[in-house]
Length: 283
Ligand code: GUN
Image (tube, rainbow, N blue to C red; front, side, top):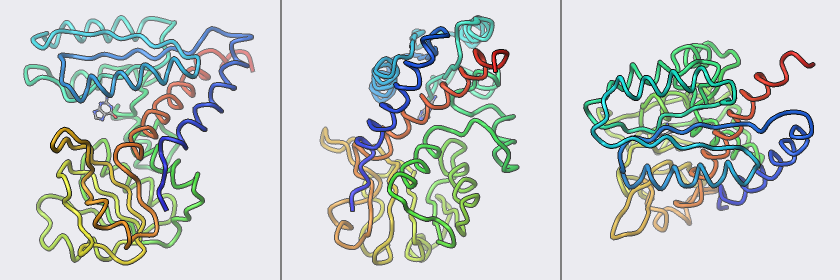
């Protein structure tokens, strides 16, 4: 089975659009502000997708684009202006940032009430305590995709390759919350394939094209491939899709798998922040 993120995200975006159409009878439109620094080709392409999707559901989306050589203070001032702008519900600072910028300082400068990426330490702390939090978009989108395909995680062994703060670590927590047993592997793991072969659900998020082949997986595993790599002008994941296809019970394609679900989850996060901003005093 192919886990079609593109189609699932389209359906979920359509449902979100209907909610927003209802809200627009009473309130202003939800507003996502995106800060982009430089012209990293992958970031430009992600941002284009985010802007297009936001507009397709009836959200306002604004792009604040800085040159590659901008200094931390200038970006910080923009974040403060957006924090203080009552029209803005959600904000993201597209990563990676050029080296001269202080990424930790800038991501934490985003007001927690506008943290559409869930990268603020307060949201991460709430998530790790299993409390309601803004969930990072990629892992949140992955759980929504599993839900859309009625894949029950309870009691399954999920093996995660990659330990980043934006994917590997939070998806470990979210799958654990859903009742999975978790193993987290990373670049220092010895005998990676020993672990990946144990996986009922295998999540791969390291950015290495075709790292995982059929000899590294258990028959009928469920594969979530977060990798987006350009090889010979083609996008491929971290999993060798053609090699593993006959050995899996379900797999996300690249492109068209996790990517569109990440964008949907970002819009959903922004929408939930919007609801808190505009509806809080009217319920
Ligand atoms: N770069 C790669 N993934 C992400 C993401 O989810 N959010 C942001 N802001 N930057 C990213």
